[in-house]
Image (tube, rainbow, N blue to C red; front, side):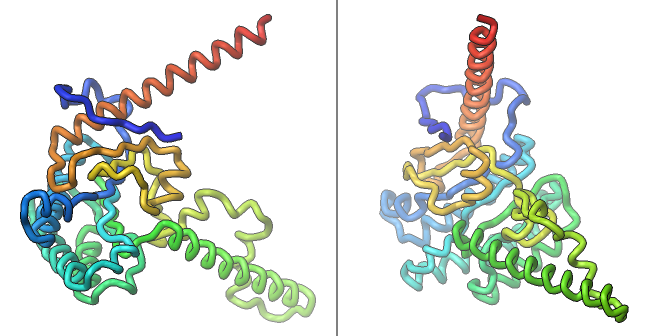
Length: 297
């Protein structure tokens, strides 16, 4: 079971050491609308403040030397919201993407930015802004930012297995073609080489399946170490089920709304993550000692 972490008052906010730094942190950025209502503002004001917090996260996680971050910017369920709100979110997102594209301070950090999700469901302008930024940062390797847009974890896994089924069918056809070539002496077809990689079930591994998940690349989204959800909602909302739940990620449900999330909050939670990992290691050592003592009896 993932650890559930709650904030305590008067805590220090900086890391004790560089040990146990999560390599992949995922954020469910919840609470923009509630933050706006609490402040007597329009929903669009809350989303704008949320976009600013998203930009800040890039700088803060870079400072913490976190290699991968994934942010849940817009789920497939969010399309059910009021059309005016949805349009406003995509307008703000385009604005943020173009801002990042011209932010020299941020570009110097060599962050590679990618989209994960159902690209065909995005507005054309939003998708173009994203593809331009992906192309501009394609050669970067100091840090990786995955932005989940029109994303749903179950649908991602579903489309991945559909693609795997197509690959397997192609391999079967190629194997049959190769057999005909061997039997008849006919010229080999180009696609017969496909069968070499799929001669048995061993090719279906965790790593191979991950290649078929968004964003469809050998450069896969790695397992999540730490999942943070703001807004005090205790749900993971169909976010990265393969990479997070399957990786037994530490999970934090944090009470602050996303636009309120600060540098100190991030470093406080990273400290709590470190403690969670250390406690788990101590428990494992105790368990092994008990087993050894039992076996020595």
